[in-house]
Image (cartoon, rainbow, N blue to C red):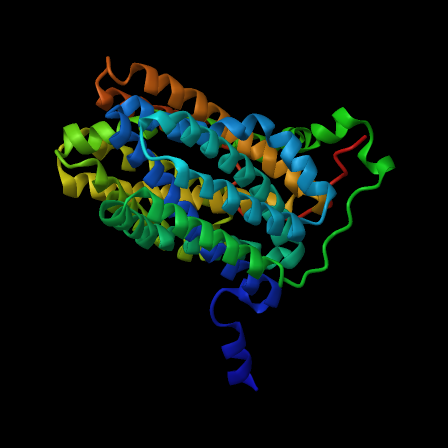
Length: 413
């Protein structure tokens, strides 16, 4: 009996849930699509226009829908999250297929439009998935589940960018578009088979006024002293990385003397660090707590940025691995803490509020960097990002141990 019990509990605890196992399978195909597509689009735009700024705008456009995040989070909290995910994956597969009509720089505006739609759907599915994970897993399995999903995501960054850039180099961008659409369709099919007892939506009386419902996620984060401080730190740190999003092509071409296609392999190197972080995050969180793990992740991220000012491929690679590690620890610990301290039917709106805190500053700074990259040394952008990340640590809460789960009051008055 002891041996059998031991075997059942080996591996991530979250995989004990059949529904979560199916969600994870769908997540594999979603991330194959994501990792292959967004990098390819930036490289495609760079090749079509020859402009670093135009390519950088692709990354900026991915963050623009953060402005709609409160509305998207509200939708995710009002409907079945499972079926919302199914329909969203089907819709994005159709939208991505329209890129098959683009074959020259004249289609640049259409590429941007597709990126906007694609990113909007991504915010919606992120809000829905965080709530679905909360419905599928008990508190003690959340860190394991988030770590596993992150590891899947980052593991595929080792493969998908390489596959995507290889397809792009041999058969062109349309091959990547087809791969992406098929992956989203498979993900939709798998999600449709997830068995889950979803938390019921709030009643009209519980929701209160429209404005109260819309802002509930922000107010919940602001009312919790630990979550509010961590949200501020993550907004500063991840916002500052918007500068590096645009500096990536000068780093590759000017710093390392490599072609733009090297972006895929370099992102794969970043994924190595992220995979290790995803596999270790749950154990560290259980031992040291979410807050400590979050702060350590931000520190590692900041240090990992510094080799970007060098012309050493080895140093830049090591820095990218550290960045992947630091980002992943920070995200997993923050999401786990937020899920534990948030009511079930407020998950979408707090997830949306977090998305705004992360992506809106990052988007603004990415646009700014895209505007000035031609007139400023890219290494200065890297230094500014590292300094801002280190400075944000002064805002960390003093709690270093695991924050206990406590009854969380409804965010509606």
